[in-house]
Image (cartoon, rainbow over the protein chains, first blue to last red):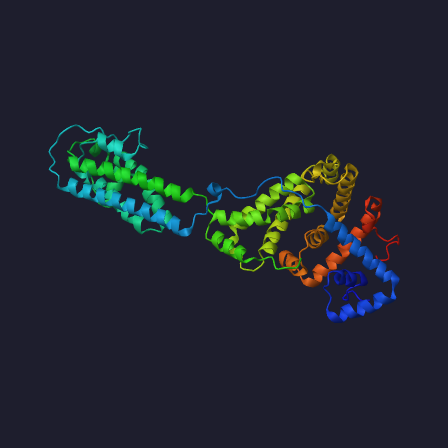
Amino acid sequence: MTSRMPDEIELLSAYLDNALPARQREALEARLADSAELRAQLDDLRAVRAMLRSTPVLQPPRDFRLDPSKHARVTWWSRLGALRLTGAVSAAAALLLIALGLLLGNAPSAPAQPVALQATDPSASTPVSLQAVDVPTLTPTVVAPAVAPPLMAPFAVTAPPEIGLLMATEDAPSDMAEMVSRTLPTAAAAAEPTPQADLSVLSAEMTLPPLARLAIIVGAVLLIVGGVLFLIATFQRRP
Amino acid sequence: MNEQHVRIDDLDLIAQAQRGDVQAFNGLVLRYQTAMYNLAFRLLDDADLAADVTQDAFIAAFQHLSQFRGSNFRAWLARILTNTCYDALRRRRRAPTSLEAIAAGRADSADQPALVSDAEESPEQFAMRQALSKAIQDCLNQLPLSFRTVAIMSDVQEYSYDEIALALNISLGTVKSRLSRARQKLRDCLRAVQELFPSAYRLSEQKDQTP
């Protein structure tokens, strides 16, 4: 008997399960009729199978159903919807900030209250709205920073969703805070190279029209809302 | 016993679950959890580990449900479950405690907590049934893993050869040869403890004729 051929036990085992092709089955049945030893082997295999089948079915110790709150699948369209909302919120923020830029650009530079804005403001991480409220006046050259956030915002909207929105909603608030408080000169220089764009310029004074102030607050709030939405969309459990 | 383990309502539930419906998937869990837990328990001989593995397998099944294209959900689940079991066995082998120590620690009948006494059987019958169940499990434990899996699926859980081939990704010929080898080894092992068995299960007294 070669190794390629099923051995006798294998034939008997398959025969037991009625898994032999007709010709093999008939040949084996003929030999079984002749051989008591073969029949005894078949009986043994049958007894083994019967013993295994007799093993009791065990009751599972607990229920394995999944908790819908933990395993709810975030489908791609719900994810897309959240991203779309984030994008809309960010775009609205961008529009408001552009409007602010225009308002500031046309604003008469009548001096009013002194500026609280400091380049070394320790609360750089505070949402921009707080600082914006505290900063009623800016130098004329500070028009540039108001333009800078809109420059960021279009980038956020057109960039690949995940990265772009991260920029727009997560980084943008702190970016803005920095721009207003610290990196303003750099941002201003990048937007429109101004020789005076340095720290001393920041402490100068100018008026901020009430509408512009409102635009800054609303724009910043929208950016924060967009950021929170983005974080929710990102960290929802993936399937 | 060889019926296709696909039911029309299975396919409905699968389609819903594939769209992310956890409740629909839970309908499938309810249907298959006893079979899957028993398969895991027989493979691992450890009630707690079997429960953990079964849970993990159902979670994995839900997460990869989009990959189910076939028609036999039971075999597909069994494939995930056996792979999860193999991973658990590999981890256990790497763990400091030896298998023998674990087995010795569970030498009492506490490793089969769910074996419930039948109201109609005498304490003696219950004890014998327990002893038999344990003897069979001990013999299964001695089989190489690939033989053990086939023996449990075929003879304990009554999967068809086709289903086993599908679940384990092996050929029908391999199913047949592994099963026959497993049955021979089980026969030899059980012969040594056959005073436990009811007469219906008596094996012949002849010595092993096969290598």
